[in-house]
Length: 258
Image 1 (cartoon, rainbow, N blue to C red):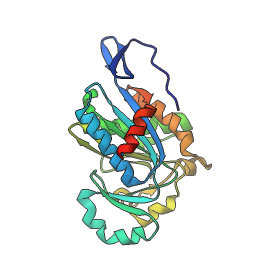
Image 2 (image 1 turned 120 degrees about the vertical axis):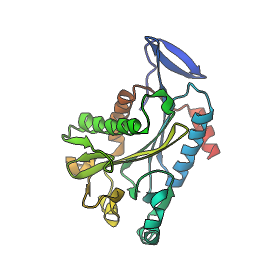
Image 3 (image 1 turned 180 degrees about the horizontal axis):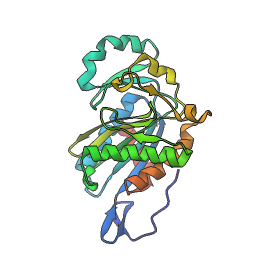
Image 4 (image 1 turned 45 degrees about the horizontal axis):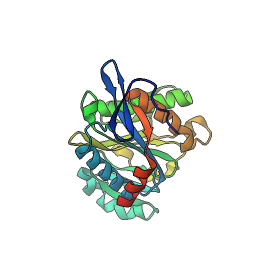
């Protein structure tokens, strides 16, 4: 998906990028990096590179949005690693990787057919703290599903049920981290993922809760490529930002660093 240049007053905030100036306020510019299939470990490294850039770099740079699809991998937040240490070999025997990560939350699964979004954002550009940020992520997914696919009864719930739900079934998991007001990790929206992978864990540690996907709900295969445009539109609306394609030259340089 390509993004058009904004038609309002613009201010060059860093080389090659512009922020929208309207009524004395600057609309944050977020660069979108669609990387396609990528291992979980490599995606974490990419987030660390961008987080360092957004922490120490140009103060006008609001952030980056990574969209990725992982091969099968189970992940768990670092504070709960010992609870699943004995299950690591069992889960890896299924053909998946296993990673302990520096985010909140319990065990979850990522795999083919799941749209994973990692917003690496400087929260100084938005009001509210981390809870407000998580709420924006939830609303982005709710708008994506409701407006893009006309599904009803899509909702977010209070902790510990963070994420997006359709009835008693979770369709999107969210787990984030913020350091020096810069976010990493993000969300995973089930598009056409094989839901059998979730049967080997208690997703997010929530007993008795089901997991669903857009494909299951719509009774047809919904590819990630179909979902992405709706998601990006919703993200720009909820975060009140302008999305720009990640410059090709900078993308090549970024991959060299990885």
